[in-house]
Image (cartoon, rainbow, N blue to C red; front, side, top):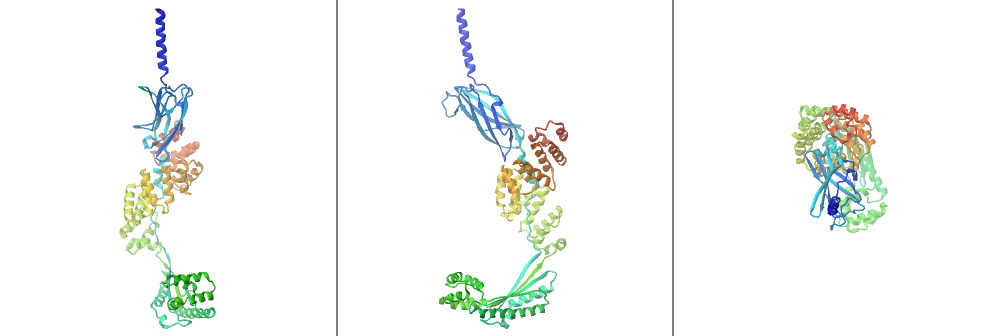
Length: 567
């Protein structure tokens, strides 16, 4: 009887042990490797790769194991796509894990970043199903998160070079006034009908105007270019063209003396004006003009050209009536410079009577002062006097943006866009406004339209940072010395260039020094870290709280030097 009792107890123990041993146990954290070891935001996502290992004799042959990565943060959590594994005796389509040898696995996932995730942790949850029974294994913490240095772009763009609508003001404008004197075939004399033409009278009037208005007009020279048509022999045409040059030059010199216009008179002649001939034929409606143009391209010798064209008898009479007479001429050109208002005159006129200024002069006046309030008044004047031009509103938006008044900047940029929605400057600036809000999709749309802006490459650099394309950002910034350029270099791990850029920024701000501190942490340069952090907090006290929670400084946060700066 006693033997039976012992046998039954032993049987129960075996069954119980068998039952317990069939239940999978939890896995410690050392069975998982996470890349990166500390989670980091790239663009607007947190990419994670987990490499795991099931040890031998761990995986129950009749069980199904579901692993769910969970990123937990204060106030919430988010799950990634679960991965399912099965034992050798389970019929299913999941990956089978050997009980005897175990197995390795890799999980890749991304989490959409929100600011609360800057202080977070990544866990793995395990749920097991065996037959009709379900149970959970202890969750495992596998990584901390997350480094959000890339998100500094939303702050660094605050000192970006937003796009100013530039002026087209020219103080010195080249001017040219022309008149032609026409000649009869093979004649060189100046006919009175030609000397009294309205075109020539206007030219002579301009000579007098340049001579008397010395404050606003400066003579370069007067040119005389005489021509003969390409019909007739070369020797004859040389004499004719030369005679036309001399007679016209003599006449022009007398007119310059009358106008008291002192300056250079440059003269020249062309014996056979084949270039003029080709141009007139190209613009004509002659039925065989293509044939004539082919002759010009096929033959280079003047006499052969002339003979071949004469052989085209069907059109030669029309050439003689319509084309050739227009080539028997002397062209007189008055070249001078129109001198605009000086900087002082523009600013004085702006104060006294801005309505007398052109739009370009007013926009130009905006760069004649460094006073932001004065610039705002200038651009307000531009918008008031020239409401159909976008630049006044756009530039008021730039001033507001640089002051940190982003609400006002947004309103001005919207008004500018309503006037000219295709303006590259405006679209770049709207792109910057979108980046400030973290709206990367809209920023990309705007900046694609702003590619022609002067600061377009720098704007794309900021966009690429927001998209996590750090190498492309570095290329777009080129040699720019801005916080954003340094951030791109830092994120692409070009620490030497980042250090050089940060030290070259003319007006460093809190972001400049904070980036310096991050650079110090990444390069194990404690002096660089502490100096940067100290200056950042001095300029912007809220940086202390940010630094305290920033995993970039995890190695230093417990040091007395770090604590003294933060406190």
